[in-house]
Length: 190
Length: 353
Image (cartoon, rainbow over all chains, first blue to last red; front, side, top):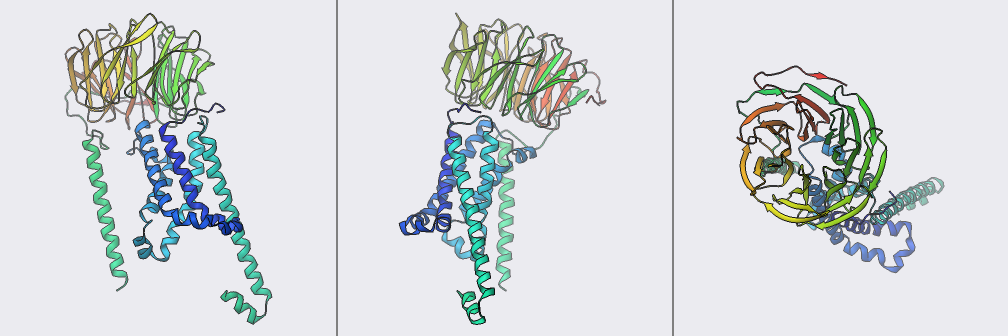
């Protein structure tokens, strides 16, 4: 495991897909976990490019998947294949849904459900970490540590974000409980 | 009123996706690999398995039998190798050999060494009697697809997914030679005299190399298959070569002159493995269609049809005495088929462990 192999093309595609995917997750996470970055304009810039990067990440994931399927001659008519490659397949399925609904028409059609649907990206994030660890276990290439770092870091930041949001919500509801009825109404309506 | 168009959209969506799925499935059939098993209507006797050995948890990609016929090695997707008593099926040792699938196994002619290759880019050389790891060859940069050991047991050829062919000197453990090939080589075999190495490629071409003065030199190639050549095997006398392909056929070639002798058709799906009986009179082929067929290589006649595997047959090999055919499959089993007269149909099955 400590000898790092040279990465084949499939692994390069996977790494680049991971990199771009992580970038799509950054805007909201940076805004909440590192609020000071708002002043730099970085989250806003990333937000503007988010859709294109997400679609690029998906296309690279397609290349990664295709190269692996051809190399390993995966048999999709064998149910066991779905069990063995469960994380990769599920991550990819989520990516398909997100990629195909990454357009204005879908946003308009799905309305509130679009946002709910795109929260599947956070499930994909966890599956991705699992996918990298499971499939590269015992034969890392030198792309594996940065891939794990990226995927792991974004997952950790996401968890911090969730914690912060939970604390904020808790503080807000505490304020509502402690304040006068008029103030409660004001806080509620904020 | 608001729900009605939504319901219609879902119905349209479901109809279209079902139609698309059915179309894709039919396309897959046309590409040469089907999901449905359609038994051959050929007349030769059908034999079902005599012994089924279940011990692996996942696909068994590779098997090898020791020259004395006493030890059977099987390697699976989870990187484990099981060494079993070839007569009783008793598991002698389970080795957690690799971090990824075991793609190929070979046993040296003296029965002392077992060599395993894997998708973890490593080749391991084991003492077959003690199951101890002797050394690891880790120069490969990608999945090791196939390996072949020369009859003397001192040189190992290995093909990897990055289109390279490497030769190692097993006495020193050092890489001896490196070739860039034009295509992925998925199967390798040395001739009985050790002078010729043959490789089956993804482009359907069978490539030959001459082994002279401890160097490999490319010589010629045989074209004819319309799909990936998944398996190659030399006849014991070195006169014939059998190749199994994604195009569902087995081809028998005369080595002298590079002439195609027969194209054996009968499998309904890609042929994944071929093996000659040590007596040279029969040839076996294992396929994705879950069956094994037996052929007379010189006449091209099919003489047997073995059914029992519930998923694709990944690897086949005859026992050294030629009395038993051993197969491994995606159904995680290793099966033993007594090769006897095909005049009767056998239905008795027993699970040994």
